[in-house]
Length: 261
Length: 378
Image (cartoon, rainbow over all chains, first blue to last red):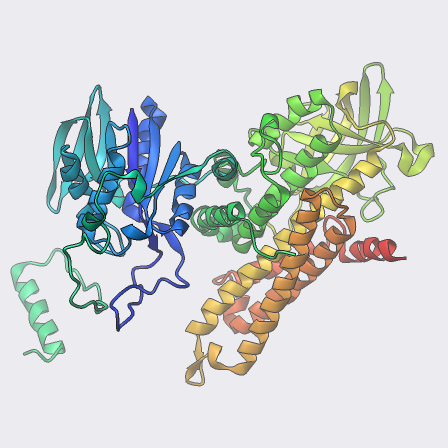
């Protein structure tokens, strides 16, 4: 089985500061990590590899320093790593990003593509499903469990209040949830191997069958009007096992406490 | 001169940090309190290739280097001094001498499972009457046909009750003094070999420190490590390497105490402002971090010398001396900055202070390190 796992290198925090003038992220001084949903996707692929054997290629689009995330993936057990990097790709929204990734994947061999649900620095959850559309293959998003059954996969697609159990034929794409598993650590020996024995394969604009106008900032229909930091809300209090009368009493007390009534 | 770490070491640091935070830190207070050997952590370290980092892959290791290995001792010790020394004793005192002085057969039989982490190792040199004066060995080994017969005892042996392979030193010819000492590889299950009393210690309380007892233990001739009479040199050379490991443990303890203190002084308020706003706190922290960084330079230099095949005996002694004394000094300051809370077991700094003390004593006291350094100068 050939698996491509798409990962993104993201700043290691949920509270990245924004440049108030440009509305872009200030990344200096913030350590980078593999996006948590993507890392669980990689773990899911590695578990398939452990059980049934597979060849795993990790793919990322980003600046040259995104190589760090790929080395980490190799040190966890991925077989091959591809860095999609070119100045032309810069400034891409989800549409242009997914198109660029799909155009790279077109050049590769695969049965399954795994992406994370969404990145913690963008939270769009669009790139995975868009890639599947560009590639004209089926996809299942929000996957929490994956098992191989012959040529097909049995997946659990999560909803807020339940899940769907889905059987899907490969080739296909899934987007993984961080809750799907606990990703393994890198192993010491594989960290050394990832530098000594493995190469990061680079792909640039010249390697893809795509026009410059379709990708990067030019190919991005999204226009950001304004970015702002979300206000932090406290988590709230949950009251269990109250009957209607008690519950009503609690509500009234709380409203009075806040001077609402 | 390049003070930047290589990319593989940076990635390893990330691994070590994640592992320590998730697997080691949550157990540190418990194993100290219960004086319990953290077997579950050692099992996980095995799984991720952490027990044989600097040895070649064909010998069960990870094909890494000594810097990568001591960086792990440092990181583990930031959270737990016990876990740091378990690795250091296994790696520096048991795997390393077999790697450096062992025959091909000895490496295949003993180093491979040790480096893979299938077996844990220990080192027996110290005796009741042979501490700093290691030449006063009273354990005897007498050749009898194809075996040496060992009689005697060792004390203060790290990992003792959990190890399966021991490097043991014994007198093969008392008349020759230090030239009459030989080194042996002893298996846990050799008849007549037993583990004695477990020490009750001030610090590193999860580390299994026990007595080794040899009563007519038959050690096959092929388990002689190095040549007959060369044991003292093997012990000294092994301790040169071991000191880098202990220096790294001390370094980790100091850094761990600083990290805890920085967190605490930002939270704790007195006289209407957080402790971090007082200049005394700032100056103390600045001194603590500066000395700890200086330790780090010395420790990494010693490890890099070893990796580059450059003599490192003096550098290892300097690293051990300075890092150990810094660890004691820094952890004492850390407790002081925590005030009364620092003296309680609610906060980890008192444990770090107790753990730090041993780094000035074992694998050569601070005074022995000064002897080594001075000898290289005069």
